[in-house]
Length: 342
Image (cartoon, rainbow, N blue to C red; front, side, top):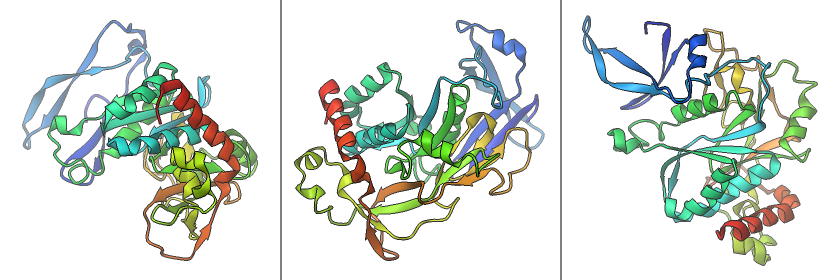
């Protein structure tokens, strides 16, 4: 593209997701919030023919800009969680959503950026309003059908998740030290240290130069029977805490970059993918795997992934999260008390 712009395409199916990046200049940072800066797009319809889009796209927060500070800027928070798949589903998903937020927050998440495709907002609204008002959540509406996409899974690759992930990366770049991309059935669990901060601090020495920190994936079987002790615990049953009820997991530990999820310092990233960084800022080619990736040892962390799963290998009972039973139930109790939910 001309005028210093670059088109990054996440092309899989009928529709492509595009991220258009243009080099700005210092004058953009002087634009006030009340002023509206817009750009028009031009595209090739046929070879040699150029048309101008009738739609002008407004640049939001132009006065703030997106700056790659490369470690020099101060951040408002340490950890931001981006929902790696836009939220969808009805009231039956609400308890899972609350559990996802509260347990990840227990370990260190300070803000959640959630993309709403088709969640039943009547069920979610009181809880989400509480989080938004307290500055702990930002909700981005993601109604793909409104732009003509009939099937958000088959037409554009799973709710255009690659685009929402990178949108979240850039929204968070100037305000957070680390970003992680988690689905609603994933909890990133520190297993040796108590928090994400302590976990990353513990590996800094052996991971000098790392920019991304990967937790290996293990599957907890949602189609297994409930944990015997948890199924006799009235509080766990009352809140229906799947992370405490489902303790049977596959013994297979998936390798890095294959189902693993990661923390990354966003200001160094140009383009992120689901399980790894694709491009780092200022580098035209994809980086070599492992060159900036620190693989968290299994003693340090696992990505707990809760889904119905075929038993491809032996299974084991893993009750690690019961160590945090009381803290989890207290957080869920606070949600019920404050927002009359659950």
